[in-house]
Image (tube, rainbow, N blue to C red; front, top):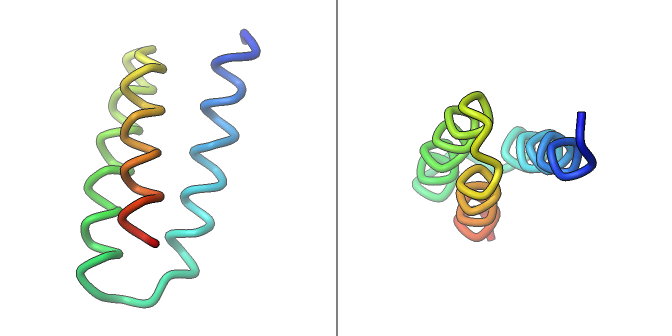
Length: 62
């Protein structure tokens, strides 16, 4: 596993933890869509897209 991939995996864990703690509502729903897109991109080994979606998920939660 390359450091970049590991970094993406760590970001996914961090964003998922933040999502789990977030109160229910439209922000959480929007963040989930971005997180799911990040999972799909990460599975396809597209770290750039995964990181973009993780950033969007983080922004949606704030």
